[in-house]
Image 1: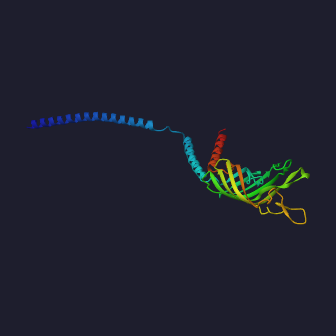
Image 2: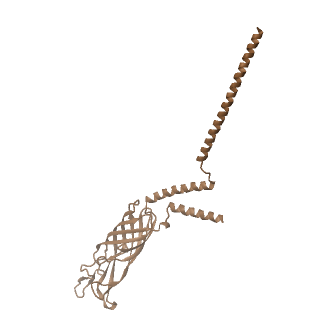
Amino acid sequence: MLKKIFLILLFLNFFVWAQTDDFDEDFDEDSEFYSEETNSEEGDEAAENASTTPVVHSYDEILSHKQFDKDQRDDEFANALRRRDWLKDRLILQLGLGSRAPVMGETGMGMGFGAGIEYITRWHIAPYATLGMVPSAIDNNFENITLQDGFGWKVGLNYYLFPKDAIHLGFSISYGTVHFDHDVRAIPENGMQRDIIMLEGYQFDLLITYLTNEWYYLQFAFGLYYAPNARDEKTSFRQSIGTEKNLISRVVNKDGIPETGLVFGIIIGFSFPEFFPDDTEIRRRARESERKKREGRAW
């Protein structure tokens, strides 16, 4: 009986040992397969990460790129702000013809020629001043008679509308030389010259102006002058010779120089944006200064 029990236990022990050995072999094979599969997946993932990972730049290059992006965004924002107001803080040098520079006259489209300066404030109110001349010329109505030359001046205020647009509507009020004419008589003692008569007064204009952030400036003006001294004896009329005080015109127009009249002027100008730089230009100058400093330290 004991022999039978011993043989059964021995047989069971052998059977358990055989099963354990097969399991260990299978586990080893699975482990090797799992290890190979894991290593393969890790290799593929590493290769993929290596292909998608960007090249690492230096710290200075990264900072430079970030600063460049920031400057680009700031410049775009500043340009957007500038496009919202083309007018503010603009200094303009001007050349013109007609009533803006600064006088029109009796020969229909007779014009003075002059130069001026204007400063448009951030409130779009612009003080300006012009100085101009009427050149001497040969009289078209009389032979061998010259027309005297003369100088005029004008100061005033302009107010502009529509700052977001390139075309600006405006209004102007000014005081100064508003009209000129010539005495109908020629003076033999002065080379048969007809003396010039300059009138001062007020002028009111409607302005159509082209101005962006560029340097060029163009303006047309249509207006009305008022010369309160146009009816004075020293300007439009003179006394006739005789006992009676009869006033006769000093100019070709028998009614004298009119107190009011229509005027027209045209101006071109240079608007000097660099004298009053916007944020974009300020940052550009700062970057240029920093670049020069770095180049100086490098040397």
